[in-house]
Image 1 (cartoon, rainbow over the protein chains, first blue to last red):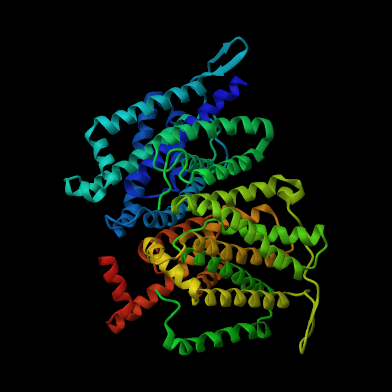
Image 2 (cartoon, rainbow over the protein chains, first blue to last red):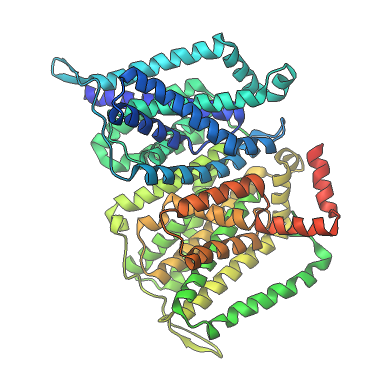
Amino acid sequence: MFQLFVNGLSIGAIYILLVFGLQLIIRTTGIVNFAHGEMYVFGAYTFWFTYSVLDLHLGFAVILTVIVMAIISGVVYRAVFHYVQARFKADTPLSDKALMSAMASIGLMMVLSRIIVLYFGTDQKGIPSFLPQVFVFSGIRLPAERLSIILIAVLIAGILSFFFFGTKLGKAMRAVSTDSLASKLMGINSDRIFIASFALGSILAGVAGLLIAPVFALDPAMGTEIIFMAMLVMVFGGINSYKGAVYAGITVGLAESFGYYFIGIISHVLLFVMVMVFLIFRPGGFFGEALE
Amino acid sequence: MKPWNNGKNNAKNRVPLLIFVAFLFLLPLFLKNPYYQHLFIMTYVAAGLGMSFNMVYSTRLITLGAAAFYAIGAYSSTLLTIKLNLSFWLALPLATVIAGIVAFVVGVIIIRTGTLTFVIMTLLFCLIIYQLVGSISWLGGWGGFINIPRPNPISIPYIGEISFQSRVPFYYLGLCLILLVALIYQSLYSSRIGRAWKAIKQSERVAASMGINVFWYKTLCFVVASSASGALGSFYAHYYQIVIPDMFTGFISIYIQIYSALGGLEYYILGPAVGAAIMIFVPELLNIAQDIQPIIFGSMLVIIIVFFPGGIIGSLKKLNQKKIGKKTRSEENVEAISDH
């Protein structure tokens, strides 16, 4: 039972990382990125390629994955979302941006997921676990890699909060997300901030993929599956609240873990109904407010 | 920009359209190949779904749940005919009503939550319906239903009895259905309701301050569009005679979105019809491999949304106006507003 709890927490941690990336991109650039799940797959596959195929050292593989994610996301942003962004004015309401970028990013999602299938094939890939230890406390088995996911997610959340409140780039991102026109007047290069926050969000997704890679087998469809759950978590927690994402991620992760164990695949339907009922009472999610 | 209310030259515009509709009615007389007839029927269904998408877009919302209501229509009609032995002619309106009721319940909850959440939740709803019909064996399971009964023969005065054994009656049924949907939509757009939607699209706050109940008008729009999707789903189930969950994945919703975006999101009736015709016929005739279809369609969607937001019709009109060298008055007004 405690194992289910740890599994749920680790899945929740993955959701939280993904939702952080999504929220960062939405709040700063106004882009709803349905292709975020494919970034997660890219992260997982890059890690598999560097660690398992090229047989590089673990730390080196992780650093290489982060660099590759930054490059891919930069290219994607420059190729597509830069032009979407160019159509917006500084005072375009978020809903207009969301509609247009949602349509564009759905097209992008189709393209990227197909490229992954064509390039890596549809067969599942496995990565040898780098933390095969299992802790046993009085009959409860705790796989070390599940625990490491939770620890690393907490660590990343700490680094992010330092980044947002302690560094100049992070502060600039917060300024742009609050009011991009005013921050432009203050001398912040908003284009650079847009691309930086898109890259940061995608790196978070890539790290989530990297963390999940040794636990589950990799297959190209995992991006589309997880992005919908991440979107559900984002709606549940409130789109403009990082705090909500944490609570919602943990709730949904635990609910999924226990629900799948007890009632099978239908638990997803119940989870959706639960969120719908929740939205009746709080349209904006846990901590968010309903956006226009 | 203004598919309704262009009052004076309306009658003149209708003549080519009427000729085209008459052509479509006469088409099966010389198009005997059942494969092409099948493609035409598919086009009618796709165009109807695209029109529903555009209807929801006319209040500045995007539904990615069109496939869900399509599925609800198909499944409820199938269940009504198989489990309750109802006739198709009763099951079609009932399926429409059921899809409308589900859309009302879902819409009331998620329209309040804002545009962004609406987009996400409709897509999730689509996936949930897919999983629901797949995992409950009473609803057919992953194998779905096969041998769905064809519509009962009906007799029409002057034409005689029609039995739905070949493709041709289905062709006419589909054509009549899509014309009915287009007619209802057009009359809604040119009524008080349509003007309210137009106001909401321009600015929600201004519309609200004019006394338009934004929430209920959006809900109405969603319900009407979804029940039309349900009706098309019911027709498609009895035409194809098979329903399986894989026919109603989230990808179908994305394809519906491509039909609309390709034709033109601002052209509520004609846009999806053009887009659907292109999207159904071109890949079949060019024989594009299934493997790379998503890449082509996906990049097409991105290019249209980013560079040609008017779609095909919008771009053609723009080109035409550039040739003449002047702008229509409404376009100037729109530019003035958006500059402001």
